[in-house]
Amino acid sequence: MSSTVLIIEDDTRIANWVKVYFERAGFSAEVTHDGESGLALARSLTPDLIILDLMLPHLDGVELCRILRRESDVPIIMLTAREAHTERIIGLDSGADDYIVKPFDPEEVIARAAAVLRRVKDRVQQVLTRGNITLNETTRSVTVSGETVVLSQAQIALLSTFMRHPNQVLTRDQLISLTFDNDFDGFDRAIDSQIARLRKQISRDDSRPIQTVYGAGYKFVVQDE
Image 1: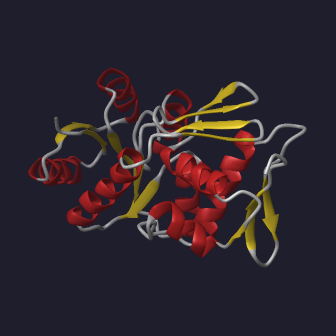
Image 2: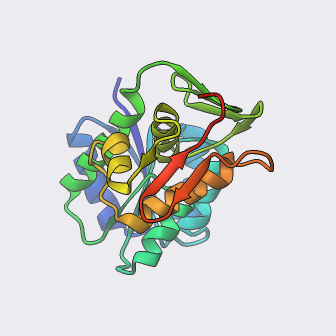
């Protein structure tokens, strides 16, 4: 059964162009051109992947991404025409798993989509527990002190890496290599943004497991190791 991709892009030429390439690659693809209809389709279709434009009418891509992330962990790749690094960080911070800057090669979109889906599907089915955090890699669910926490696929992947390397200092390069198999086309600040959002989601008053080791990287600190 083919994966379903939902393309939410207000430029009809780009949307249809991307749709054709996804269908040629064996995906089932649906297209919509504004944020409100995109949200409705995401809820009704439950796609395997969403390609989301940053600038959309009625409901912009950042807010739509935040809504979707509160409701599901569907992988999201954000498209942006803006060159500023801050705009890319905003996209990632809203819950996107990856971003692509326009103009882009549609084959690059397919390759990045395949990489994101591969990270989701090719995980060892296992339950990891470190301290008060449990990650079920079969269901992609996370609980902190028994409370369910909704994370993006990229954040779940990062959490898995941290939980598999407790009490070890990991550099940004190591995190990219271990988590994304070097598929992450980001930069240090993008990784920092993902980690900051993950840290906010899993921290509690008595537990802040992801610590910054200045000049070195990050360490996932647990007391039960």
